[in-house]
Image (cartoon, rainbow, N blue to C red):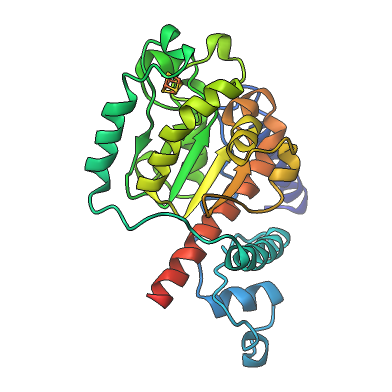
Length: 296
Ligand code: SF4
């Protein structure tokens, strides 16, 4: 191709990428960076970030920090720092308060679902079509938590269906997860009227269900989807921008936060930040898994 042809091709690619990222329907989750590569070995990852592959450069890395190789050096550096800081915070954190491991999570989770489904502990029970308990892999390493069911979820009894659910499926796919790999639920199990924010009394009434759910699932990491879910779970009024900056803890489980898919449908420009958030989430889950393997 000629130089002029190269130039036009690059402009065309950049334009297509911009259009995908700003698609107002939000349904075209951009994958121009591709899915997260398999996490390299710790030493490789450290060398990749520093650009120095000598033994002297690799030696100072005391703990495995598995950063994804994305071909985006700026993000690789950011992710490496995030992993280093986050693993340190987890080590210094409150520690997990979960009881002994649940032997058959699927059976115990189904028993809890049978208890929660007819719940009438708050007034939302009066307006629901279905209780939306949550769905996914009982052995998932990651639990995604939204705020409450919407209209489609209430009608179908499943979490994150409809347009924002389809977008969440694409976001998961971008970090190489299927919905069957993770568990997805909400703070509230019944739909608030007109999708208003959860009320404190409703959160208080429903929290025991979530607590039991998380005690059974015992995930490596929780990811809150949206401001309301993060503020409610963590009991804070900090902004989502602040909450996205670092790891938090719920019952000793590390918690990260990112945008709700419905917010991305309204603001496609936030997809880039979400893409970075979920890549870091995946890197953290993989790093924690590597540490567990190493430490037995
Ligand atoms: Fe029960 Fe929670 Fe539904 Fe309220 S929102 S009725 S507490 S399951």
